[in-house]
Length: 265
Image 1: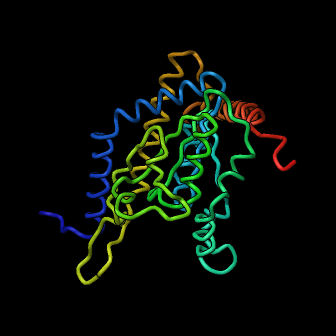
Image 2: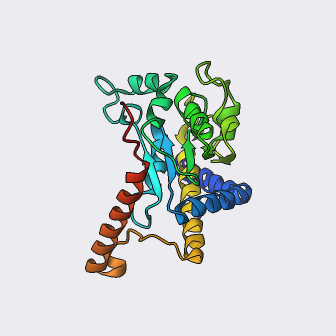
């Protein structure tokens, strides 16, 4: 008996297509990004991760969570990512407004002291608004190698906002395409004018986990692998707690070097 196709199965099929396109087209870029990350982390530095809006999701996917390790520094501004209240105070309209303010990225960057091998990874599905674009621009001006994780189709479907000046993909040293369509949403439903079911998060999360695992492989080869956050079901309660403590201690040690104590003086 053939299962009836529904919008749910259509989305799952489209999501599988996104993953297939990432695997087929982004492997070389993922390898390059992983080598840059391994060089940064293996030499005691950091890979800084920045995203606004729903692009905070792949940032949090990198660290801290099970199967992750220190060396990745998540940078997320709540004013641009706190969406669950939707309206009213801390609402979505304010977040979208703030994301378009030129100069804010420089204020964020001024809080950090970057090392010679540090990398900046900027996430934005559209890559058209001021803050993520200027984050990439400012990081590059400070000598960091910049990786953009973006939807190329979405970015090329519109012009960058005037405050941004250019697309995120035009500011980066390396572009990783999340392979989602220009509308992001992937499912058309009869009787509904607009598509539903976004795909950019699937592509972005796949890319960061591919980088995370390949970077770990390269760090093991270098003998420079940090402790990995691991569930007790895999290693036992005592070791799991020890790994958490060691990982957080290592993250704190690296971040202490990166926090610019002169910021705001």
